[in-house]
Length: 176
View 1: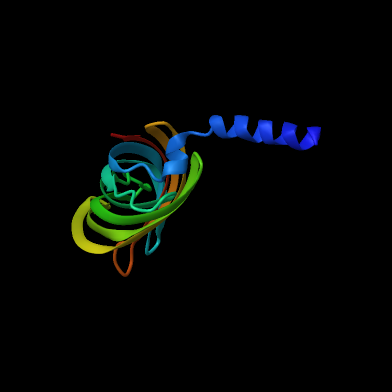
View 2: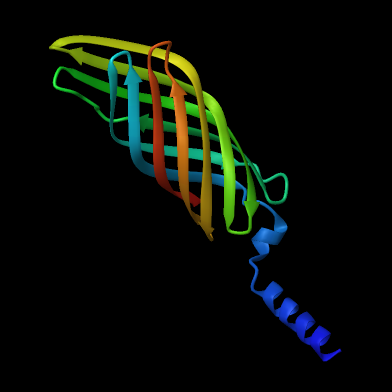
């Protein structure tokens, strides 16, 4: 009997230290963030990568406890990967729908959206450019510290029939 009372006391004490927003449901509201990472660009006879960055903002609806349902928009610059004869600049603006599950301060999510992209390619001094609207996908994980969260993500962009770009990044996110 003493063991069961001791276990009940420990359980009640532990519950007091769990953040109440975890019990109440997802954080809702606007958020902004920025991230850096690595972006491989793959084209016909070209497979190079460069440092990339993104800035983004979104809104988490917080309709279901422990579940994130959000919309997010971002600007992403995939850097300027190059070889001795080829230089590629890729950037874009994208919009995503995001769905995730939270396990206390840790969460996982998936993203589905579109990217409006621009490319500038220089091949032995001859320049060419392109643009388009294509699908984008992503998965990630986050770790929350009150209004601040750290995210690790993998995003994949299928820019056209011949160009694939992906980005592995780490971001800081602030929720208002």
